[in-house]
Image (cartoon, rainbow, N blue to C red; front, side):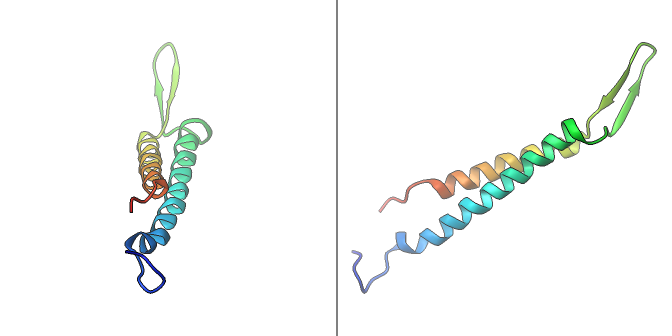
Length: 86
């Protein structure tokens, strides 16, 4: 029972959920930027030379880390954005 004298659990969780939302969005944005830059912008990590072609390979560790940050940040933001059940 919530009133002016008693603080409910849902009232205590609001600042935590707001922080989760903001931090999750920041992590997801940073992960997306890291993955995009590793795939398309920055110089390649390796060059594969064959007799017919030259292929540049992206830094797969940075791409995987960026995608992992994107997914984890999205999950944190989703948890922070969900409604509280009271």
